[in-house]
Length: 165
Image 1: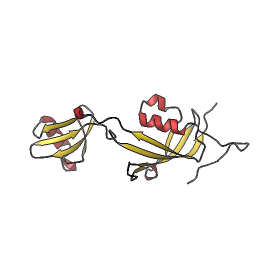
Image 2: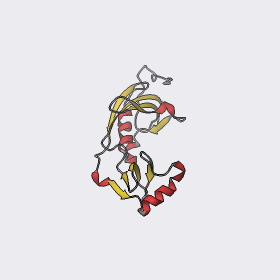
Image 3: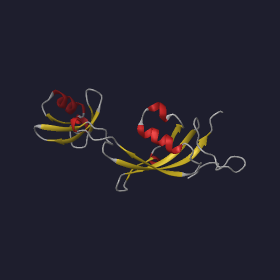
């Protein structure tokens, strides 16, 4: 993996600072160590402006941002992320003939209709996972997909484009 120049003039390592644009590579593993995502599988590199995490309000992006700030070019760090609490009130058992289930069945007809593991978009715009489908009921989990789960990210800083200071 090419990590670009490893030092500034004078031999001091280049580190990521607020305003810099960085390119990173990450590998995400579940609690058992299985790879669940690898940025190398994407066509485009993962790039962002250091310090922008505070603006997004996305906790995972904020954690990446904090982990990269001050990291020397070419270095790797480990980041642990945990989804929020799983909430029972976001788990629903809906009659199969309910108008929302009929709408979803029609919308996802080309994907085989409602089936276990299908992620659907509800009429309110929220995403939910179909957990189980019977002849009479559909079980839907509208919790965040990371709820109650822990992920470990191995993040490598590949390049730094310094901000105009």
